[in-house]
Length: 314
Image (cartoon, rainbow, N blue to C red):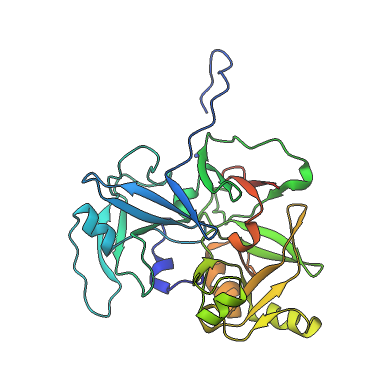
C-alpha cells in the first residue's frame, strides 16, 4: 500500500457439533514463513522442487508473478509495457499449509503479473487468502501461523480490538481488508491493518532509519492531511523530506493500539485520496493510513477474521 492499480485490482472477491468434547488441539506448526525486516514471506515448494518466495500482505491482492509462473512451468504472454501477462488456476504448491482462499470458487484463477521494478518475489498472498480464518503473526519470534478457527488467546479486554470489515446486505464480508483504530498524538485515527506495508528507501533515508543497506523494510502510511497536521503541531518530530519512494516521512514518538503504547514509529505520506477514496472502496469506512510491521514489531498479534477480533500481546 499504496501499490499500483493493477496489483490492487487483482482482488478475490463461513464447526460441527461433536458427540463428546474434543481434545485440546496441539498448536499448529508455523508455516514455511520467514520474517524479513518485519514483513512475512512464505517459501512454497513447486511440484518440480523449486522454491517460490511469496509475499504475504493483509492489505494486498492475490497474484503470481512471471518468475513464479516460470518455476511452476505455467505459460503466459508478457508484453512490453503491460503488467498483466495471463491468468492461471490456483497453483499446486506442495504441502497443505498453503491452501487456496477459504471463500474461493472452484474455478478461481490468479492473474500472472510482470513484477514492478525492484520487486523480487514470485507471488502475493493477500487479503482474500487471510479472510475467513484465524492467524497469528509473532513479530518477536518471526513466525506466521494459521490457527484453528476461532482460537484466540486469553487476554485482558484492554488488549482486544474490534476490527471493521466491509459488509454486504446479507451481513457477510464483501472484502477482507481489516480496519483497526489507533491513537497518535491523542487523536484516534482509522487504519488499514496492513502487514505488507513497505518502505522503499534510498540510501540516505535508509541510513536515517538505522541501516543504509536495508532499502526495503516494514512501514506505516498516513495521509498528507494528517502528516501536515503533525508537522505543524510538532516541528520537533524527526522528518525526511524525500524518503519512502520520494515521499515525506515523519517519526511519531508513540502509537497507542490495543491498549498498548509503542514507538517511536515512522510514517510515510500518501495522497489523501489514496485512502479516503481509493482504498475506501473496499473498506467499511474511509481510513487515514495503514499500520504495518514498523508499528507491530513488538507484538504477537492474533486475528480471528470471522469474529472481526484482534488480540495483541506484548
